[in-house]
Amino acid sequence: MVRHAPTGASTTAQLTLQVVDGGSINVMSIATKGAKNERQIPAVLTGDVALVQDKEIMSANVGDEVVVLGVKAGCYFRFNQVGSEIWHLLIHPCRIDRVCHLLSQRYVVDEALLFGQVAPFLQTLIQNGLLNVVDGTGRD
Image (cartoon, rainbow, N blue to C red):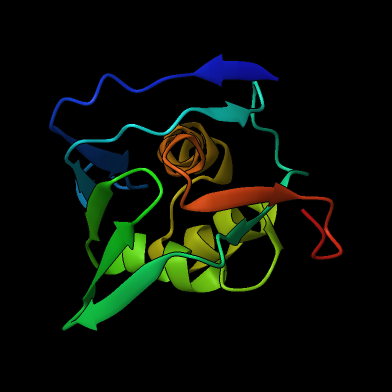
C-alpha cells in the first residue's frame, strides 16, 4: 500500500480508448474540485482486485451521465456514459478484469488496452474515497 494525498486543486481528466479499427472514443471524464482525503491504495491495480462503491457516496443519474459527490474527500465527479457503466457495475463487488471484459465486449476494445486505461481511472476513484478495495466477498 502507498499513501497518496491529493493536492486540493481542481482537476479534469479524460480517458480515451483506441478502438479496433484504429479510431478512438472518449469513454469517460472526471472532474474533481477540492479533493482533500488521504487514502491508502494498492501501488498497482491488477485484474483480480475487486472494487465496490463506498457506502457513503451520493450519486445521481443525469441522462446518460452520473454525478458523484465524495463527501469525505470534498470532491465531485461527472462520468459520461461509459464511466457511468463502470460506476453501476461497482454497486456490488466486482473484479477489475470482469469490468474490462464487459466493456471490451460492448465497445470492441482489446481488454489489455482497456485495462491499461481503466486502471488509472479506478485508481483515482480509490484515492478520492469513491471506491473501496474488497476481497471479492464484499468485505472491506
